[in-house]
Length: 488
Image (cartoon, rainbow, N blue to C red):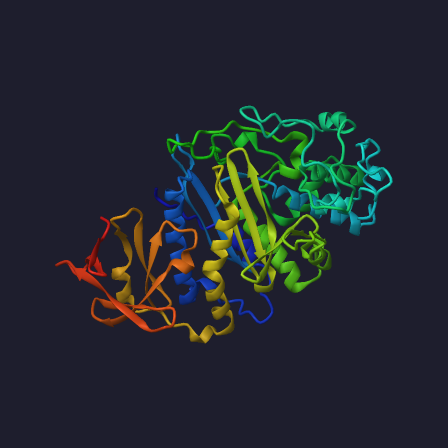
């Protein structure tokens, strides 16, 4: 499937107007740095291959450093029947990423003096009459809703994650059934992810602000941040247009079936939003800007930092959460963000504020590990961006001769071998793989058309020879005495 890469001009204009980060040359773009450019190119090679091998109908993604969109693009199709290319402006359900917007709204109202995080939920919602496992236990608070430590069950008493209809309840139906539900644990006892809890947080936003939830979100978050393609529910008017068609998980026959259009109704504050890679990039840049520069823009900088910090951690130290934000470690680094999973869609937003990096990944297919995809997007660019920021003068463009070897080569046991320019030389990347950086086989040129594998200890291993056709292009690789023909 052919890739489509859109420039996202409106986004770039907005970000270019923002002040540069401390110590950053406002005239210098990281994408002009050869190290960053090479990392992005290999990332795209990997992402395009994975989209095909994982049979994802379409995906869109973006990688951001501070106020610069390093890359935004799409692969595959937003709709298979119409053959609509996936692009940075394609609209997807972002499902539980919605919780971030609801949580930001709660903290806005906290800062405005309309509520306190330690307020009991029933102070704002008199109809909150759920049966409590421990009537004499701690109060169920607003903070408990945001940290999933309230003891509430995961869902309202409706089977809305059940197909084929996915009939999400209205807010009135959620309220009607609430008194017949019971908490799972006393408050402040365990982490229990709860869409019911964040749906109630949306109701708190409406009660404390005196405005309908969707109206409050649009006026106080989406419009000020310029998130013009983000909506608190699925935009039915975009069906057949920019809204991607969702597809189910891969069946035994290898097919994915289209999923029905849905609206999450009363569950919207927890799972109802729709957005694009462009808008999630802008949303990430706002957070990086606010944390880096301080001040107040939609939210106070210190409030956003407070939301990013861990507010609940399980005794096993495996599960931790901020205020609405998921907080996790990968390879010893701390990340914040959130994932989303709705019928036919998987998405993820990842931020690494310390490095001013973020990645957004959106797919119109169920059964896709969106969090792992977002993490890999970050992994590809992190080291190159760090070098480019710290040592801009050390950038050296790779030998242009290397590009003639780059491309896809066939293997005899399935998949393919991508030859890419990497760290000033070549590398071979077996595809498909969800661990691309560890799978890279680095090469070092020792003679014309001849390279040697670079071992992990930096010693040189066996030869890798590119056999050349009369037109001067390689037609196959000879490695370990075996042949890898170039894909036509």
